Image 1 (tube, helix red, strand yellow):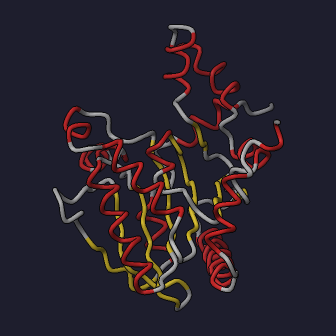
Image 2 (image 1 turned 30 degrees about the horizontal axis):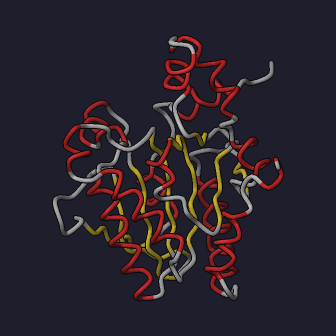
Image 3 (image 1 turned 135 degrees about the horizontal axis):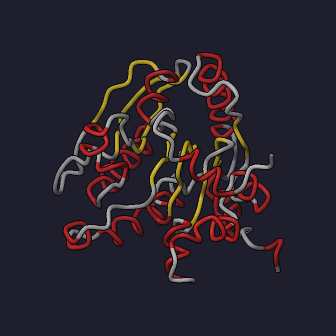
Length: 260
């Protein structure tokens, strides 16, 4: 039976999928977590710090959802607030200062939408990340491991390379939200998912993602070992790429050209 776009949405949201911390634990060594945005608080929905990738020092940042109900509630279900994005920004600027590549793992339905988050500048925090990441002088690789929702995901995905797991999704809005706006009926989420073109296959076809990662052995050691190898290899390529910022700029400027 052919899988639908909404099947990918449900798989991407699955409780049994590895989360950001699982990837950090299995792929990197000597991970040292750093906390806080130096302005307001430490956001548990964003985990970041210094680690080694096959011996090379890197900065790794991940949106963490948690596994159990208690963990998910404590991590705000993977919906970062402005302090989470500012923490990520602080770590990326630090990485640039010390010449460390940045690797991000993205898995969020979107940024936290509470009143407090808006009062503390949610939109500005996301915008600052977009602007700063575009101009970073160090390589940036973003891996979408589950949901890639709206600006909450894009704020950690302005990268030289964007990879997606085969059942990950990348969309400006959730299918339910889209259906509620267009048809006043969240029950039409399946139809909305198909219209949004949010699958990894769609993203690669449009040029938003460079690679689709097989989930055949998801969560198993061979899966992590292969992803580690790919990340280490791509990091070295990017470190030796001249005019990195210009090429990143051109990558984003090319979006949409195929549809003109």
